[in-house]
Figure (cartoon, helix red, strand yellow):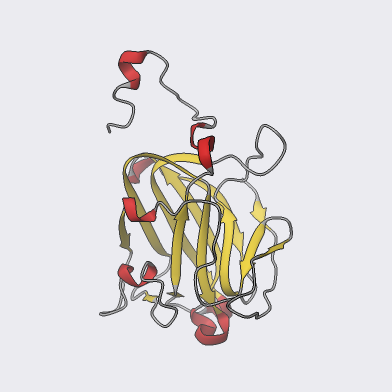
Length: 208
């Protein structure tokens, strides 16, 4: 497990392309989701949150409207849970956060966890943020790819993003958007730690 280094984000126009920060993050300070090569697989999943205020629920994470946001309404930590009907390869997460608008409601420390059920989730990435303002895209795994370039995807039924702390010790949190991205092309088959080999078993590999 490794922590992602802190970084700052500077505003840019909506049309500006994503930029790489620290060789780890893609930073896009526009309000609309950036055009990225990794496919958005979030629509395949069921989304839920630890708590929310009326009108500021999990649907606000996917509506691609920068003026809406998930607003938690309970004790920390706060979390977003994404449950897929079958095991999926997940490469990256994109989050839209805005310290400019949300101040102490802005997440400062995140933990990304993954697993096959709510009872076996393991942390796969820890992220620290310094006054983010825009779409932040990062790999969910810190394990380097076999070719030495990029990071391996993870294979999981459940992905969970946990807000451990906010800026200025804020209690509730705002997240204005979130996208779950799969690998490009055939990378979805990379290094499943427990792949089925026998054809009879492969027929049922996506059944829980």
